[in-house]
Image 1 (spheres, rainbow, N blue to C red):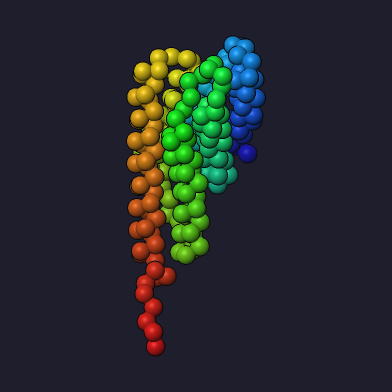
Image 2 (cartoon, helix red, strand yellow; image 1 turned 45 degrees about the vertical axis):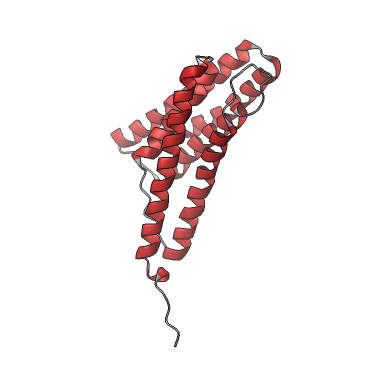
Length: 193
């Protein structure tokens, strides 16, 4: 168990804290709940960069980390995106449903594509893409912007940027998957004899 993996596990454990605090705020409007939700989300977001830095800097990359890190990101972001797309009695700005559907669709369809490529080709050459990392940053920015209750006008730019990079990363992963399937012998046409 590396230090980087311990930080990732701590990030996963922050997710239910964030969810509970946000739900309490959305129900009661008690600002302390919003502050605690914001702090837990911010700590989790910061730890995302920290565990990656430690893994690279101190050569702590591991197979467990390759699974836990994206899982922690998805748990945090998807729970935040879903909750913030619900009605909060006017306490918080809502994330548009189309953005929620876009993000969840990508997060469901990319692993489905990985499964298909793995099943058909026996291996998957999946590389993290900069567009995916930028999409994550903008998605986290949208959540934090809403939790901080800053200008709704500027929030529109964050939402547009999150949507653009989420779509771009999705298209890149689709192209990568099609290339891998096309290069595999299983995708060659069979001749009738």
